[in-house]
Image (cartoon, rainbow, N blue to C red):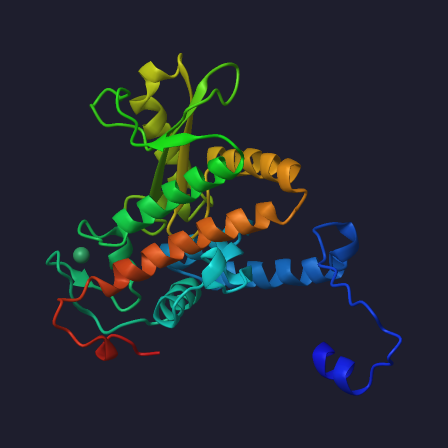
Length: 295
Ligand SMILES: [Zn+2]
């Protein structure tokens, strides 16, 4: 619209067009009555739900980071482009829509009509690429901060012999290097539903506790961050703090306050891509994908 106006109606006296992007702040927030209305709709929805899955889904989606991928500018140059198939799956999971015909999963179980089985399937094929993406994003962000890091660092292992996902090669805080270990747990997994249908991000927080126990003997020498997120988007408190710390460094270097938004969006998109891949890979390899969707 602006381009058309500039070429057709604008006066020749206009020499420069400056684009200003709104930043988060009180001035841009809608009035209180809008929030009141939204709160009312949310409560009506919650009280109308009878299944734990729907309640857990709605609670998870209320976390601000859960919808970060929806605000991303789709661009292949900054890795924020989601292909159309993955986008359809992500939207269907978010809205609780019927996603596919029930079919036998490659694990032998039944993949349900909403695609939820795929997210907690023992043979979920989206898990590893999602895990790799999350660690890659953290590592790249640290590199942009001028902090070199190493993935799967040798010479450091937890009690069961497994390595952390990453290590900074220079001290992160209090003279200690940062080690992190990321994980994405399923919000709607049967084992998590009793908690996630009461409190958002409770599956991620539980994963944090497990990670801390596994890394207990390394806590004296390293700053350990369990980077736990959930399939429906919520992050653990530790994950939020790490992203905030990295963002502050990026902002101090670049002066661009949108660094925080971009980082949150890339992480959020990595989760959605992993979900989509998990759903698609429940099918036997020879199945035509066209039959998968009801949408
Ligand atoms: Zn399965």
